[in-house]
Amino acid sequence: MWVAVMTKDEKRYLNDVASLGCVACRNLGLGPTPAQVHHPRDKQGMGQRADHADGIPLCPRHHLATYPTGFHAAPRIWQLEHGTEAELVEQTRREVAELRANTIGRAS
Image (tube, rainbow, N blue to C red; front, top):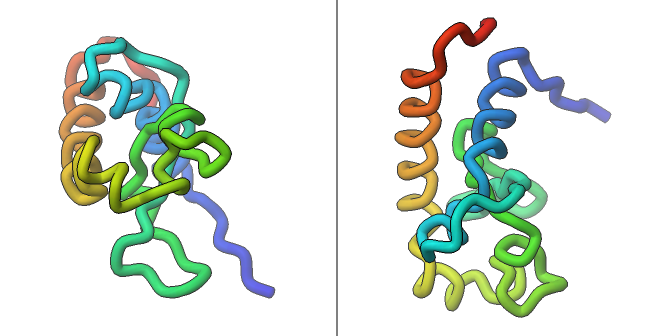
């Protein structure tokens, strides 16, 4: 079985994504909350997930199917309320770029 190994740049990017805090909470004005990275499923086959560069930061309540407010509980309804995965990927990319531009003295 082949297992993909994350590159240093992918790990750094995912760390930056998670450090933003939940995008849904922030967009609702609730402030940053600890986040895990959601990999969009749009245009992915069974058992596949998007590239790490498409990660979206979501807290467990906005991510997991174990919560009625989680993306995986009702993706279509969730996206009507919070935005599409594509919109949130673009927002996340902009915010990571801004984070990196505003970070002084960051070790690469």
